Image (cartoon, rainbow, N blue to C red):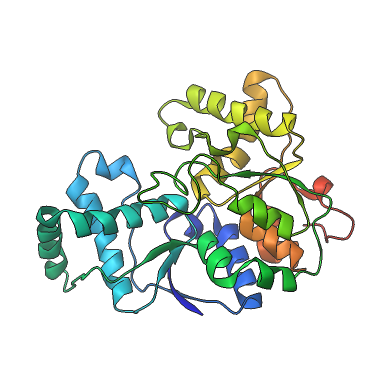
Length: 294
């Protein structure tokens, strides 16, 4: 199956391993991610929307217009991009005044958008189109050594009238994927709490406290690692984990996997192909001896 692939900024910079692992498992599952030509920033959630909402909508709409030419569903790895594109799609369908202004902007760029695009998170593509049964058929290395706390964060499930990947209060689809891969799911109260990712520049202290609550919740429930489907959440929980340990004088040491990396490991793909050597918190000690070390 083919999908119009919207990378977004993060997976082309700080989260290259996320894209590498997604493309690696796509080959195994016979999915073709066709990158949208000449794509641009999605509007960066509310960084632009808060000050220039029309500009933010127009930025996202340009990507939708480019994707519409491809006549495929749009998929993206980043939950923030997923939210921004899906929100724009909804606005353009329900707010004719804004749609008219955006249409003018698109015409100036030689584009039109007729609302024919369906925006989907890559996790939803895998779980709904490919399905757990086919994923299970491809397993070579069940991840029996892992006790995984799936972290959903904000934008995969909220607001539910835009991001409907799963139940907003009690999501379980990533947990079902974890079990399909042979790992143990860990249920914990912090799975849908905000990690504070957008505050790492404006108020790091609050961000560290928010992340600490999630880490402690996962560890107390028995997790030895975490997984997420959001670039911003992964950056926060992985790259800033040492900051949390230092600030509050606690030990966490929870490797944070992109969900695509977990799938890739279970498929027997070499860790370096999945970018595991770039994860900040080393996953070596939680991987069983049957999994090659990154």
